[in-house]
Image (cartoon, rainbow, N blue to C red):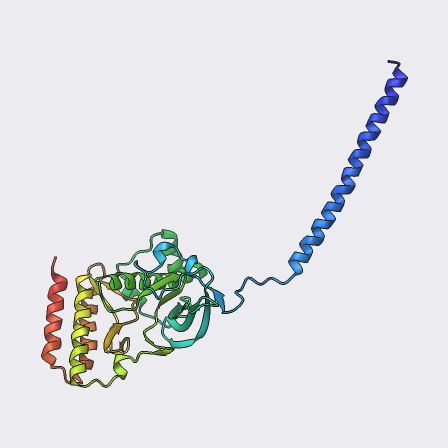
Length: 310
């Protein structure tokens, strides 16, 4: 082929490729423009991940299996994916946490249950100043967490609050499974513990200190209190802060509340002292209303002996 003809064809071929390349550039630019327009519309459009009603979607499925209550689940526990949580108000405030009332319901059905939601404050906002006594014998699994909590960094303070929630949930699970009269633990997620609401409708059951039992009721409640203490001791636990103010009475049944500071009798060097104080604090309320002092002393001796058994 003559060199001039070859050069001409090569030029034409290169020109066609350049034209095709330029066309691709135009199309690519148009695609990019359309993409940017769509992305901008999406970014600027309304974003609403909340439920059509209620205050939040159920958090049941956000918890891991071990962060949910023991099986078999009570029939009243709502686990539906489409369930929502309604905030009903605050029940009480405490040194380290506030308790709220929520309703978990499935919209359009009669599936609904009222729950108590205990939400721990971050450690920097808590008023609880004796945590060290209760936590003696407990260890964080990761040394990084221990250092962060010791330095009171933001991460450490969050970890400390989360540990209190986890400790209460784990205690509730173990005690409930063993037959100790405590609320059924529904789930824990971060600093929030959801549990059975002890009450009628939206009215909480009265604290033991608020009741005025007759003689027969007093005897029944004392026996229930003594049995709850026995079972906890058999498990190797002391409540750590038991009194007539964190036990409630519902339909004649005594229920023990507030368990984040539950104490291991053997790992905690103050364990036996906490057990003795629990018996004394609760027993003094009963003796002031007619239970013989000798019964409280006998229970004290029984539990100390039970705790000392190998």
